[in-house]
Image (cartoon, rainbow, N blue to C red):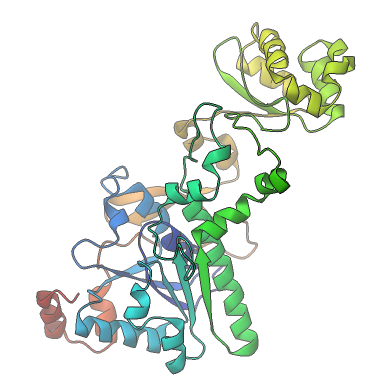
Length: 393
């Protein structure tokens, strides 16, 4: 399962968005050469030390890559980088500060003049033009600008998502656009530039609340873990203090819920609860009734009733419980990858392939592949040592 074997990606990346995109390419077999700053590397390496001394974000987004250290401001390092791109690269990815790649001669306009089939993917917070082009962009800030924070959290407290969803959205759109560009090149021989904006990526994910607030209508309310517009749909405490997540989608399920779960079939015929809109409007009263019905039951009892009634439900799992999730174990979704600090578990990428498995090679140490890549370019050991002394690599 390496459909991208033979494709080489050179990436000037840091943090999450670009590394997540290029890791997907590496998973599919592409050779991904990660350019890192000598001495420090991708600053995500220093976010924490939770994975046996390595950063959790870095381990997640950088397996199966080669790490080449280059000070891209150094004249000889620039020559190495340009030669690597011209001779090897099919795709260049970068999420440097706005304008930095162009100043290094790495824009699509510059590279395509000497390599017409090159694909260049630029990832930024707000895009390559417009009034926000030069504005600094981090995940929380984009979650705020895209309106996500305004519809997430409780009535009193707006909240961000736990994972870096703006980065993830941008990374996934970069990945899929690069795949499409590779198909386009296969058909036409033409490369192209891809301009990925974190704001636009997360904005796409915000289309439901945008349309809900169409033409000045009120936006979805912040309702914690409950659904903003469907009820009952969200977390409910059982008598043992544990929480069960459940969701109803239609009137048929509402009647079954009243009959089989609450054991109060008469509620289904009450006018005040006769539609989703009415139940949502009366959610405080209805919530009290549900909690009262659950108060004498354990969370396991509630889940059993819901399962028997065919009502969607889930546990509110902790991270420790996800590590041990029986469904992931049953479907054999865990494997291992190597790191400089030893073997660590890793989730297999989503999707099942009939032929083979995804590539799951080691997470590179900083500069681990520098000597080998430079040797491929014809540099001697003495020359590489000299470059290292100068701080070029």
